[in-house]
Length: 188
Image (cartoon, rainbow, N blue to C red; front, side, top):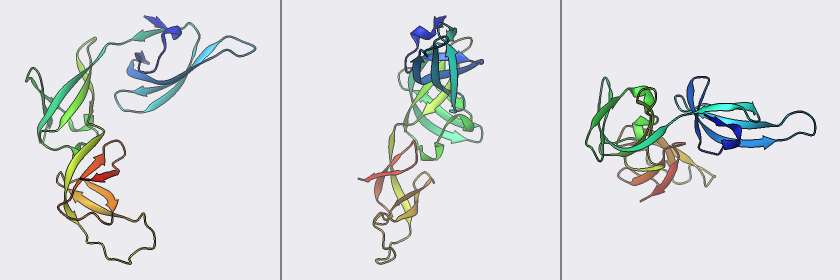
């Protein structure tokens, strides 16, 4: 058990029976009335941000969360298969647990977050911030098609994902893609 005095960004807690992490918090002591703590919590099961206000000194349940390195092996109709990089243990996750799975190629390193109590459970599977992929299909850009310097076109990557990139990207180029917002990073 912990109290609101123990709040810090990155603290894992159980809120309404769901695992959450504190993204932002602020202690408030108004001129009248009791002190309270405003928070923004990210639900680790679905990624939603929840805003909540706790009274100062309220007791909260903290949870134990562990991050582990895994490598993506392959996917089938049941889900995705991963191998732990140190123990070589293999696990399978359903399709809905992995965000931006279409940006993941075989051999990709990921980081998984596990809740160990009451039973071990995988909460999230996170790709690195940027992944490097090859463009397999791109419409050719025609000079003079746009008056803007920030024009974008859709391309298909080696994993089948479709992302928006600048007009100068062609088939066969290697690019980096931001996995958080699926935006173009740079050409390699």
